[in-house]
Amino acid sequence: MNRHINLDGQASRGGYTWKEVLTVVIVIGLLLSLVLSHLGGGAHFGMADGVEVSPDE
Image (cartoon, rainbow, N blue to C red; front, side):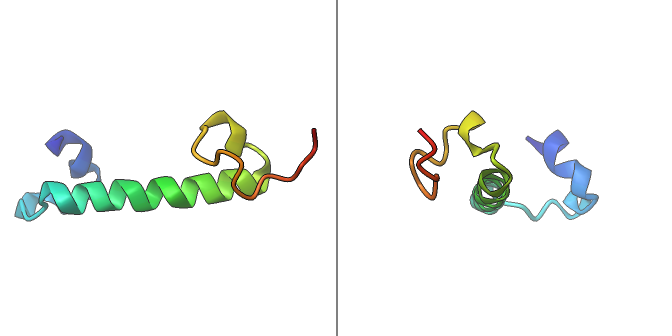
């Protein structure tokens, strides 16, 4: 897990708890799903099951 967090360059403080990491991952996931759904690629992730999907079918 620490390897993944080190990409921020702030993990040297060692002050991240698993709750903070989980919250960041969820927020980023939600933002990505919103962006991808606007771009028309949200269906690949399955996170937006029928949420804000235009009825093309």
